[in-house]
Image (cartoon, rainbow, N blue to C red):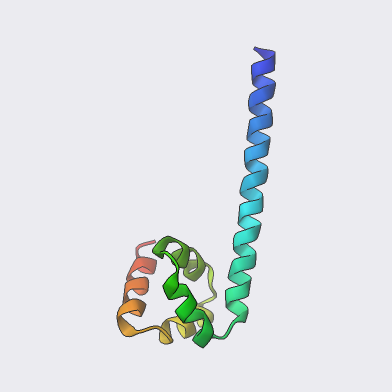
Length: 87
């Protein structure tokens, strides 16, 4: 039983480490998009899956998000605005 507890504790620690690394990677990706011009970021975001695009858009500062949405075709900007409002 002690061995099983230790194994589970190790597994939890490993998963927490992976989760932290993923969060750091997401922050770096978001930072990259925020430093791009909105004109360049918008078409790239449109090529991503909706889930990935939403992770990026939801993390953006309001002024950056506004600029990116402005540089999208109206139908796409409306779609992401609706998805963002549902979060």
